[in-house]
Length: 118
Image (cartoon, rainbow, N blue to C red; front, side):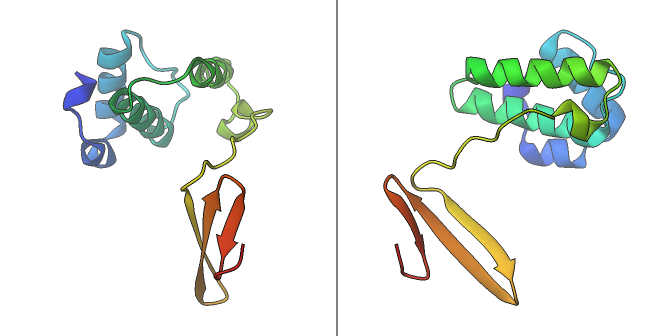
């Protein structure tokens, strides 16, 4: 079912439609405290993970913890407390606009490139 969904479908869906899709794809109702934005993000993660061959065990544990804290009434930001983001892998391009200029950093195994400098 989820494999038939496009990311654009998630972007345009209402919160009610996202709750139905969540229930259909996860065989469980979403936590009642999840906002449409979090439903959309969770479903987008599921979709992207499915297309990449599945999510890792660590990702599943992290999401389960967030879902449990949100179900217990935690606010979105506090539900993610204690989580440590992973480092970007080699080949990742990081873009940031600052001071009217777009800065691009390219991550390599042994460092990063920024403005032509390693």
